[in-house]
Image 1 (cartoon, one colour):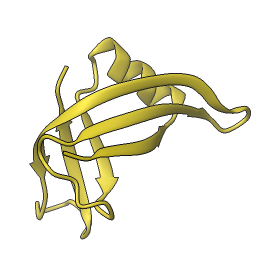
Image 2 (cartoon, one colour):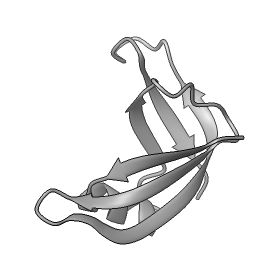
Image 3 (tube, one colour):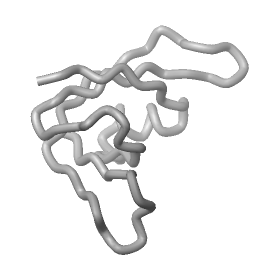
Length: 79
């Protein structure tokens, strides 16, 4: 299991934090695997990192899907 340190913009961070958003769309340059953890660090374009962090486990990976740009994946995360 790996832990992936990722920036997350405030509106997406809030949606994940509330449970409304249970997925992430990311370029797969890190070889994401089911069971890995996403360390989502809230990042505001005006002030930088806010200090808020969420840890979410990858439970599903959607790749090679029609309409999904090559090299990108949809990561289902545990709520």
